Length: 378
Length: 239
Image (tube, rainbow over all chains, first blue to last red; front, top):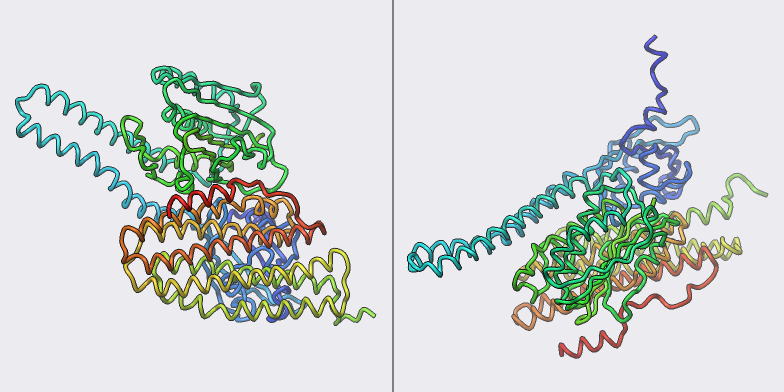
């Protein structure tokens, strides 16, 4: 009775979460003759296989993987290879190959299983980066705190005026360390989920309006005007994590307000129904520009774009490529309260990457900067 | 006619495309490995890259021979002819990418003899990833026959240039600050230039794919994000 309930074998392999392939070949010298006779749903999605029976090299062309497959096809041995898929969503795979029994028509068969090792590789790299950068970033405010503590214990002990001033500086430094740790924690949370597609629907316009409401008092304090130009409600809907999209809008708008001169205007624009090319179309003629992140395109997608423009000092072209790097701050901007943690854009980039969107920047020195975040529209 | 042991022209073209994809895989691996050799100061890996280059040369020669053979004996027309010609031309571009990767690997051998310039090798790594990503995209477009994806690579040509310019300035700052970094700096500059040229080959391949699919030569201006004039101005300021 239990036998009747057992699902068909092919169906089980089809729904396995790991990509599974079966390769058939007749002649070791004919590389086009190695064909994919089976690919389960996970493999078809990963390798974008449209029809079964196509050549293996159209799906995987890495030489070490092909060698491992050959070992199983013609050497009768188990093979193994590491494989990295580049592109916007970098992933690491362990490819395992096993020989199968020869088919009735004499074709040799091999089983290929892909195991996702992205998380462990990413954690390894993150740990190394974190140690190098975070310790450096935390050391600066800490050194200043220690210095002031020593002064307060020493000759400034009885100087009430100096004590007040030093305590103020110390509080600012401690706040800076706290901000840094907050940003680091939120970044690491985002990174952990970066390869899990977000759920839920949201209207980008509503999110942006919320952010504008929240930031208006701060902007008014700095004498900066927020000027929104949004599409109607209900048009710019996307699949996404509301809190994260809120953070994207907040970081971009807050940054623009920070770098605006007093009396300046920050233009906030939401558009819908754009192609990827239209989303990153030039809006400032003669600007240095760069795409910090571009999504993998299948064709025919439409995007919702959020453009945030300031009229601040702008960013020189040589700084653009490194802008979304963690802890990277443009030189000469390390003064006063404008000091950020250097993590804001990295956070924006990781959130957008999770939502399969893109991020572009245009800047003219002395005139201002435009950030464009675009996300696939529902 | 149609003896079972004679392959149809369609099969021959398809196997030619498969061989080009295989050559593409070899070139991608060479590029990834040579950049790793630079960033990790990995001498055995660099030597392996140099040694493996003959494989690419042999495969390219084989593709060339087969493509010419196919065109001469089967006289394909229309799309089949364009696919054969495209295979021939893409193989040449990929073989050049392989040569550039070998050159980077050779330079990494020299670099491993001097002190590490960590921030600069990280910039090289970033640029290498960008260029490798473009080549991957264009080869994916080739094997899947996707015009949009190829056009996308063609349009976003300027990113690599921006990285190259940024790295160029970074290198100058280093070399002016400390003359001992001039020798390794010069090698890094050539490495960056080689990566930029690999990016150019990816753009060429995108154009060839466009021709293969549509039969038209890609025309029109690429959206220019940076005018040449501006670039020469910034160079003058530095001089």
